[in-house]
Length: 154
Image (cartoon, rainbow, N blue to C red; front, side):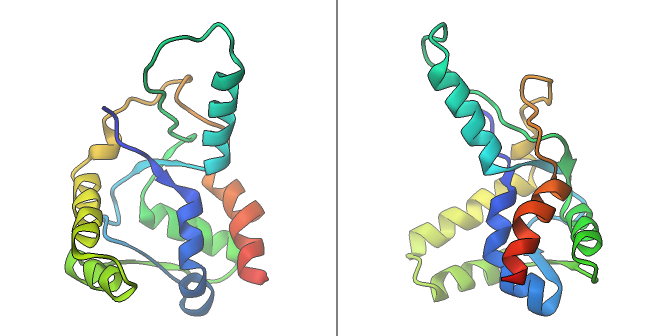
């Protein structure tokens, strides 16, 4: 079973850090390039499949975005789009878990999130090969310009 790509839209949770401190955070290695997709592309693929009367059965459909990016790549693109420096800061798993617990997550949920990110850091998201069928159109730069930048300015 393929892993899920990183969702660009999850960065909206870091709006305050990006706007106020110029810091992008994750538990992943800064140089690990992973599939990154916009949730609107997932919705478009789902809608296409729901409307396709010829499609039957069960299965999985990978939605990998147009390119693999590392968090260092994302920070560089964010710096360019926002017109100010953004740096990547890796968060240790224990610190990430403490943040989750501090926001009210249960111990099992916080540990499950840490375990998921450890699996992602070990390459889980790179299990599915990128093909024309698994690629989707929204680039990270485009998403930052159309979604993230306006959210930071509001």
